[in-house]
Image 1 (spheres, rainbow, N blue to C red):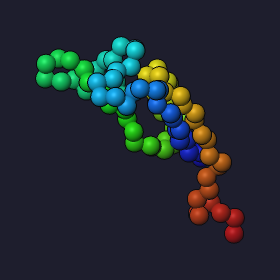
Image 2: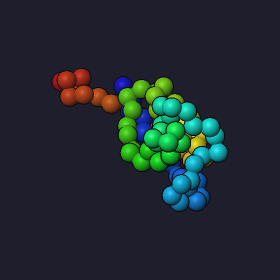
Image 3: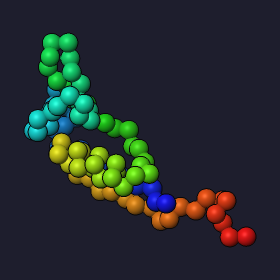
Image 4: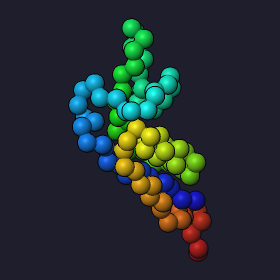
Length: 87
């Protein structure tokens, strides 16, 4: 088993309130929030999460890149649980 984690850098100026990515945001997109007046607001998903799934890690990385972030995916060495250790 391997664990995947993302490291990213936000695009310049994207910390300014009201900033939105150049791409179209859809309902359910990471960071997109629908407001009561049917407009979309955006906040960067700043939680740094580890993934056990390669697919989930690369999907999240692709989404963040679409928003303009520079992203690298780091892959751990094989994880060994204590019950798997050689006696």
